[in-house]
Image (spheres, one colour):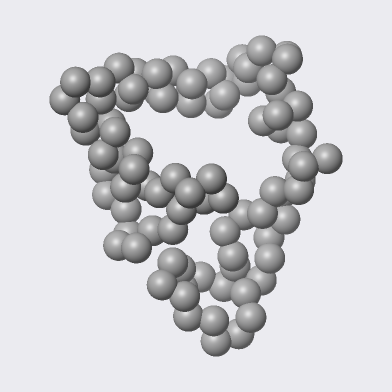
Length: 87
């Protein structure tokens, strides 16, 4: 796996590097990778249990344009990372 240098954390503080370090752990990394793969495949196949769908799919996704000239170390894109509004 590779991520751009300085990839930012999400709202929970988890950075891509944290995931990479955990998955590469010799003791539990393979189990974590199997669990993450299974979870991702479940979500992508629309097989989530009905009880959790409001938590995964109940928000709105809003793209916020960055102010012109904003050069942060996290991204040089024209839009900020996705923002979720919980309903």
